[in-house]
Each structure stands twice: as C-alpha cells, then as structure tokens.
Image (cartoon, rainbow over all chains, first blue to last red; front, side, top):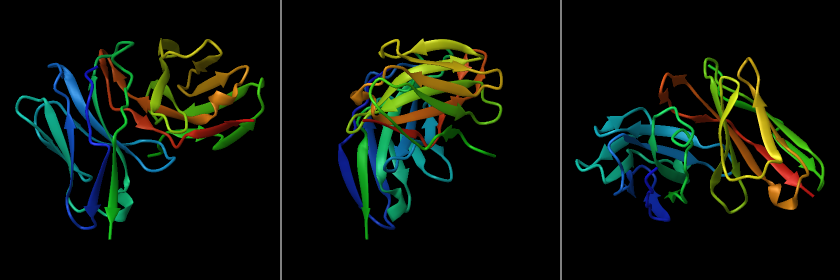
Length: 114
Length: 115
C-alpha cells in the first residue's frame, strides 16, 4: 500500500471548518483513500473513503485532487467532540492477504478549542 | 444495528500466562481483523480471518494465534505473555464480496495489561 504523509498536529476553533491534509503521492490507480479517527483509547471510527471523486457523508467531506496525489478531509463545523487523531490510509479493495489489512501511520492530532 | 463487540473490556494477566480475547463482528460480515496498539505506538496488523480461515498475519510471533468460528466470531489467543504484550487489542470486521474487501469497522478494544 502507498505511504501517506500527514501533519502531526492541527488546531481548529469550535464551529469552524477543519481541513486535514494528506499526501499520498505514490498512490496507484486501484487504491482508495480512507479516513478514520481515534478518540483517546477507543477503537478507530470510520469516517469516509473515496477513489477519485469527491465524497460527502453526514460526518465529513473528502476532496481528492485530480492527480490523486493528495486529499483533504473536511469537517464542516468542528466541535469539541471532534478532537481526535485522524488517520489517512491508502488501501486496495482486493480480497487478498496483503491488500486487506489497514496500515496506520501516525496520523494528525486535531485539537478543537473553544 | 449492533457494531463490532469485544470482550472483555479490560484484562489483567501476569507474565507467562495465556490471554483469550473475543470479538463478534457486525451481522453479515464474514471477515475479522485483529490489530495491536501498544502505548505510544501505532496500530499494528496482527491477523485476518475470513470464512473460518486465517488469510494473513502480521509480523508477530507464533504465540499470537486465533481462530474464527462458524458464526464468524473470533478469538485471539496470546500465549506465554510478556510485559510488552500490554496493549489495546482491536478487532475490526468487514464484508467480503468476491474479490472485494469492504470497509473495516472497529470494536471498542480490549485493554490487556501484563504484570
């Protein structure tokens, strides 16, 4: 799976949009971009994923650049409960031994403040 | 719909003992994945089970083993516990359809402490 690069930490004021960037310059054509978050000592929570089109769900929006080498996760109105470590993961969807696992990096620690 | 469940929430063992951790996947999911998250470290892939078979394992010694039951629930066994096995153990499940493995959804984890 392609490696990802994320800033180690970011701050965001409550009520503002949080924009979390991710670089995945070596992504291949059949690899998806997944985002998870982990609130302290809890299991990671799935947020959103996409292949090449922008995606939106009730939690967030995912913007993928046209060349697919980077993406941005957008939390439109951040709240204190969004404080967490956010992981950007690139992964194939193939049902094979190596492709099915998730490879977590160090993520971005998002601190939402009043 | 119930999510992935894990038991116990916390487990305390001493060195040399064995630990058994349990996971129930989301209804309809056939794949179960185990991950280890040691303090200060990232999530490391341990094992993947699908349709009762071990499909892949991470870079962990053989004393980490498990199985998947006919109802798709899974057990992770850790033998001869060492202090560095203390970690949060996370289980995830996903739907697998043919050659496609879908999104993995995680449980709350089991916190294992080895004294």
